[in-house]
Image 1: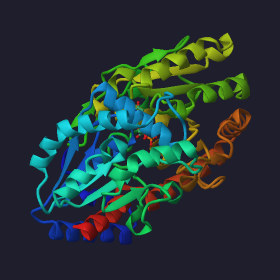
Image 2 (image 1 turned 30 degrees about the vertical axis):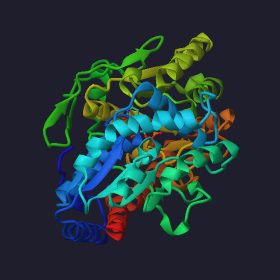
Image 3 (image 1 turned 120 degrees about the horizontal axis):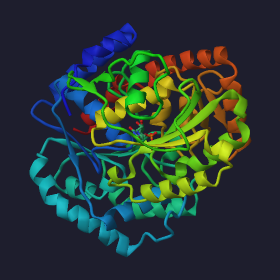
Length: 467
Ligand code: UDP
């Protein structure tokens, strides 16, 4: 994490937005002087929260607000329990196990091992922001030390059921200790929480990170060719595969993706991409099936399902299994469809290199899809929209707030409607003018609502309120 210069947003924000952002940072730096704003989560790389923290903490530091990031470590048992909580909060039983006294002990024994370190680091007068269920168990201890706690829950469901309720019941004793609870969407708020304590703050993206920075088309082509995802067009000179790292130094993409495919993508093909962790809720298989059945071959469109190399994401024990299942389903596709579907396991050793590859893939794609069955907030959707990519996504969770159907993207009401996805993709691939208009509107909407300054302003206000 590096201090980042907040004034770079002056180039992309409207003038009034930029002035407000500078004022908010200055006020927070003054009010919190001598104290630290802590963020605690369970992984430094992979997934939406880590992605966001990389940037927003940099702008806080650049703006003079002392801020630090602690990543907790856990054993396999801990992450099995936290993943189960994740599934319960989405209303599904996940691995079929329970959330009871044994799971509570497994959770607390990991947290207890880390608590001493956290107690040493966090000082009176600091404010701690705990992210997601993995860390919420720290709330009672921190409150016991007199340290204000904000718990930020990045997940939820629009239709809570009995299983969701069990997930809430399991977490509630910890959550109740927090001074404030943040959800990304109003409908995710748990029914037993004190409304006075609850805030709704959607996440954000960073316009200048390797994930979202502008890349020239020939750089995009070079990065995708170096990483082995889309070969260079015959006869085209190859530009350097470079990008700007967060510390300002130039980076180059060297690492290659592991491609699961019949043959490389035709360099002239239309590309449809979904980028996600290997999680059943992202429904890669449904998308693959819908694409194979409903996007005609004559369009020369190829589907890329891209996600992190599965051994790299330590807090997601199910990733490798989900990817294995996807491969089995891919092998069962009819040969002509299999040739149009490419599974890309992206290198994660260098997160910024990974981000530049994701950036290039999003910019190269004619259409971006997010066929999630549930989604707190689709960071990948915001990233695609910022890049003016026409996006087709399930009308679930926060995606419904992000995309205005028919204006800044296309929403499919039923996330299981494979024909609906196929038809939306087919129609956008065949109508570039409409696709461009959706992309332009998408970009404006992200600038106004989902860039880091919006998010930081809301969080700083909250931190000052509990300080
Ligand atoms: N991501 C990435 N590399 C990958 C797969 C995903 O950098 O190989 C990023 C993606 O660009 C996005 C985040 O991980 O920034 C996923 O966030 P999202 O909100 O879409 O889903 P979550 O993982 O939080 O469920």
